[in-house]
Picture (cartoon, rainbow, N blue to C red):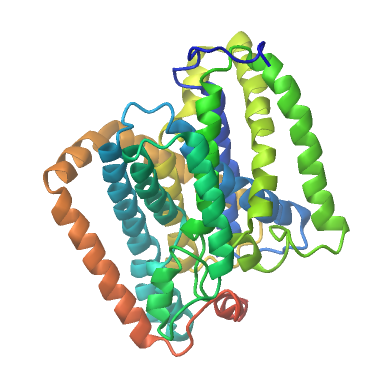
Length: 407
């Protein structure tokens, strides 16, 4: 162990291998999974199934949240106040995204087909991954204010995971109240990433980030982490695909089994994330020795702007599937390449020509912008609740059923 770690911190700069893994996650995992959600493909096709279930579920969101916690140990804005303000911005960013990918397109669609689009507008007020990130930053701000160690924060996250499982289904008779509770623990709404069940990935990433800063021999460390990860990921897939166990559920057809994952499955997935970082490290080492620094800079770009990629890709996908009624596209790879290309072009143009101006404008009127976003959110939540006869949730699969009806 002494060959791996140093008492002093030796990895304090930007970790390129993590950037490469994050770029892979947003391009190959999350964008691909969202395409599978919004467009209609044949899930008997092995490529589509692998993209949606393996890359989208097992790798996508867990790596996204784990890497967020990991990078908390490398950011220069690490005070409790910094993290709380970051939380407010992430929550606002997430709700702004929901307005543009759910409220506006589905309000548009409801004018043509209210039975299909009205229920989907409740998604404007749902616990998606950016809302999870914002709430996680609030928890992290509290732990920083209390000066809790990363190990103790991880133990608290384990307790939260157990509490989230215990509270599953604890709710009221009001759908919108349950939707709000679904931000914290699983309720029978469109409760995708409840904080209690998913915070463990952020806490786990932060804990590993604190360790990673002291690793002085990455090659030796990953020579052990990669084989261990191969064993655990093999066991994970074997148990789900070739046994009758019912505890692990990410590869099953019941989406709630994945979104409301238990502690055991979260720990299982986290056990092979260091392997993925190690593989990324080996690729990074090869690139550094054989390709130019410019190539590395380009590969890091999606990681440096991962929230923009996430948000813009959702806009591209939602507009393509809803406003232009392209649900029934048949070629997954073509759809993925087109959506990724358009997303990359928009993000690059925005960063180069508009980001500085937008940041300056928003910073001047930040609280007005924040209050406006949440006012629109509450209005659209009330509007959706008033216009829906059947409220969608994971158990009645209402959104999936009406999606199939348009085939």
